[in-house]
Length: 452
Image (cartoon, rainbow, N blue to C red; front, side, top):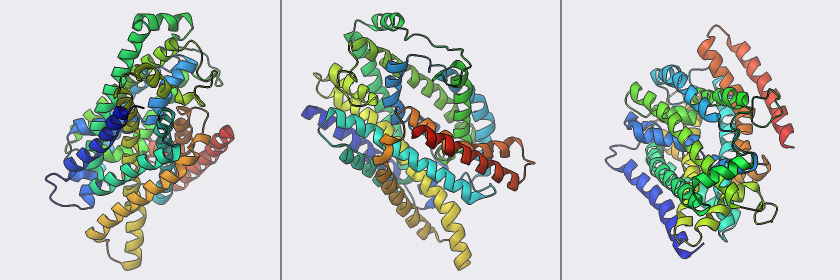
């Protein structure tokens, strides 16, 4: 890293957080629970869409996507079909239902409310740890900054502006960060492909080495990527995230109209598909660029560091550009972490603190106390995520696998309860609870066993 790279990186990191805070506090009439958690339902659908994108396309995808293409080829690309097929169910069933409920916590209307909240919180904290670890891994590869310090800096900045500015700061900061992310990815894809003779040459090398196979029609569940696994499996996973993830639901509740929420979610899937395509191009370019596998030559210690090594090798002489690209990876992480911290504070306040306070004191929690508790909970969850991120490297062999493992292990049973509530309303709470606990037990057995 040149000093110009450090400068660009620092300005991007501090500038986006500062701009997000300014936009959240500008013309704010009051700082209460409604403002901190739902932005008083005053947000425009474009920043909300970009904020949703920031959580959907996390730093694990940015770091892991090109690495996955480099090591395994294009058989993961049918995920784009799954994303497009998610739009009708998301826009016309999931979003209208939650929007009309008008809740702060997605779990307020459910039986066994607290167990749902606990499961969501466990999933989200584990996901936060992975998200913080990803950019720190990249930064430690291209700079002399240690991995622990990179984790603490990232988590600390996110937690700070989330505490002060609430969901509005999160959304505006996410918007700026997503612009930085797309600019950085497009620059990397364009400049790097030109280094190896243009995209035509990149594609030819991919074809010559079997990296252009998009569809594997195998029915063998042991195959890493098949058409059926990507389309059906990823469609189910993305729908379940929109059904039951407080981080996503809370965001599209911040707009003023139902139609705007539907547009936000629909655009989210389109932009996610575009991001997958750009990451695939970068992955193909990495494969064309290196004649010897950097993992074999010991230039990197983990396969997920290959993107960081690549943009340093390609753009290292262009002082400032490596800093911008590192900031782009961090932008994805900051977006996810800030959104998750805010949503964890929301569900904890609504589903645990308020009911407990009312039970003990026979009075509702005051607005001032609720606001202070929201800020304190955001700080606490940020600190927990920073601590757990040091164990993230043991969760999976490849970064792109880890969020899927965490979600299917912990979030899958939770999503099942929501889907059942949507489509099978005659199921009673005892049956739903038994099903969820059985599913959770099996998922934990398979998930933990797979990581050991």
